Image (tube, rainbow, N blue to C red; front, top):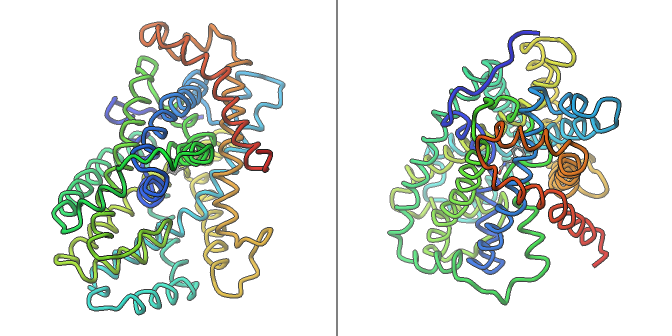
Length: 447
Ligand code: PHE
């Protein structure tokens, strides 16, 4: 086996992990869920969940990865030989494939919309025309598939270049670019006539909207947004240097996740309200509502190019991390070398993404339990596999892994975060398993 790669600097680690965490989830899902669920009240809950649940899970994953320096399946095997824990690793690898399948389709849409923006194709169109164009695009099948393939190849090229020269190097360029573009958009949005209404929708605290369900929504959103429970952070953790302070990395990444989510809302809602449109969620917000706004806005030509470029940047740094989970597995476990592993993962992803895109065509038979493949993959990963993976990971680090080993690894041989360790371990052993179990009970309708 060749020499294993690693991230070279603190900035490199934060850019790579931040690149994974900051993605489509921050831009189209968070702002809307927050607006609908009590604004600042939801954001407060989301921040508490990040602190008490997501950061400790991320730290668990980093620990598993860094202590073994192996892919997510081998990490479990090394720490608990002869047990069945390596199935958690397999489950994560499977999960990375299905997320990658639908994620690449949406990222492909972003690429098509960059092209549409460059050609100034939104200008002067009525909402009905914009709707019709989008449906024609999705229904054609071959157009989204072509873009998804281009996106997957771009991801593969970066992953092929390796950890330091590929993932880290590109994250260090793409993430700052992303932040600059986002801040530009926010400043522009704040000058719009209904900026105040947009900000109120996103931020006005309304505790009357907070129910048990709100907390569960925040939890699900945080799992997806922080890339947890499917081995991504185990894999990236295995590239973190031994003397790096993982508490700081996780804290900075969580802070970036929340900030970018809120900034996205500040970029989007003032525009939505200024043009008298109802806020929507999901792909619709980004691919239907916003083009309508760009069509009417002064400077809409440039703003739309910037916005869809932003979306593409957010997506590619996340898909790199999804791609790396299985690339690390195949190259290390099947002894096939990085190039072959990348070809295998890329080829498989092209097939699964094609199926996802086809499943969105009218009359498609590609369904699972009444949902098209695209939606089925989305909900299987965020509602079941990631929380289940997260639960098993904290049970493993909290109850199976020896406390001394856990402590030494997490505190980098007792050089940092010694006082935080007992708190984190308590959360991991008791609080987090309890909260995730509640999530499952509510999903199956027990309360
Ligand atoms: N965190 C990414 C987002 O918010 C999605 C993702 C999930 C990336 C799991 C990697 C692993 O869009």
